[in-house]
Length: 339
Image 1: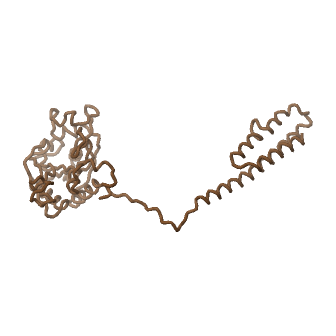
Image 2: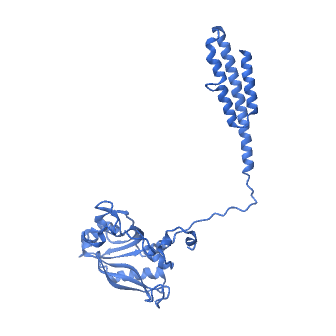
Image 3: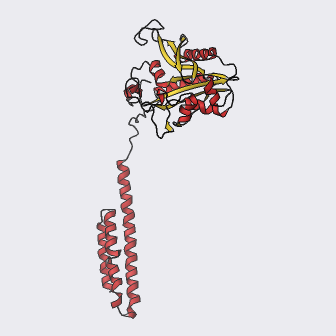
């Protein structure tokens, strides 16, 4: 038995010395020390050994196992060190080579326009308020004086999730939520993403952004609205910008108006951008309808206010003279790098 143990140990040492990789060492360990290995088979044959000789045989097997394991560990450590050295040689960094240029990102043109817009209104004392994109019909339509039979509630224009839950079609629901709290005075803008069932083209998208504005206080008049829009236009488009109102109709404002600004390309003289008129339609606005105030818990005999809605993509296209809204969402670096 002693000679057998020496033969197993010698053969194992020779195999270990000739091993070229860690996988080879693992294979040797399994074939000799594993469940079906040579030493294990010796232990399984202990039943055929005389009882008085079993302790000696067991000790010989354990000594051989310990010697083989020690040699395996030694060779494994040497192989690992060798592999690490070869890897480090391959990964040597030539510090004389020029470094890789890091390409830093920047704000999206939509975000640049929104930051400029918010800066103007925050400077006038407005608070920026956000609301949920998945909204109740109550806030998106009902509290804004849009009755059940209004065309805007048709499923062709609105993405309904259930009968009473939808993807908001405007950011005006934020105004209704703020008015409902009853905290006066109110001076807010509410930027955010909105959704409408539109086909994608140069000026339309099923998902776009709006910035709604709302002011509620005692003694607010149409003159305050005109002055606010005029001040914003001058700071956003340039100090020479002029504004004018045209009569319009919105369910949630009365009187209502469309606001135009002088074309910042031609200064009002007429060009391709303004289609020769000298003016560009920019937003819808008006005095908050007394019914909207009343439905939101505000006494229309005490308080009055105005609201306006700015299409963020629209002012971005105009400000940067972009002629196709799809460019804003195609992630084309050749386009985005211009900003």
